[in-house]
Image (tube, rainbow, N blue to C red):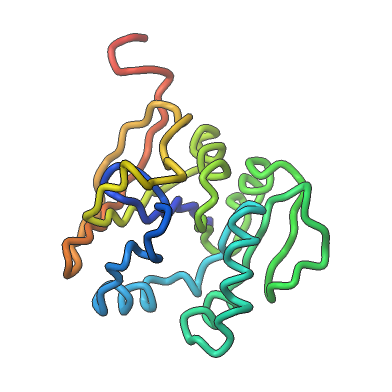
Length: 191
């Protein structure tokens, strides 16, 4: 049975991006990039929303010939959107206009590939809230982007406890943290 992993890269203060900062906050060490190449994304189906699709398909179009982007292009992708129109330009991408939570539940009940999110903050929030997320993985970059940060990851999330199941430190101080999430009805001790 396929599992679902929400996967984010974030600043220490919880932002997914920051105005004026380069990708990976300019800290993509060779060790981290090598891990990305080996981390199993090619064996998953990637899930994303329309905003992430527009951004990433643009990167893919601009980076033809880049091995990392070629691998991402070859990976099966599902985009949840009621605003995009088929056919989508990025190879191996399926457009789904149906409710994301229902579609993910159906895929998890099947025998298909594991599922992993790519960006898509609001999609991840709805999947976590619905209780369909099996693993929650963060790579925390050692920067604080309080003045320039945008795309706060956890705003609007439900209360969640996280059981740590894996951790790793990459050169440059990047921290990988992988958890099993449990969505709560409220803070512990209030129910």
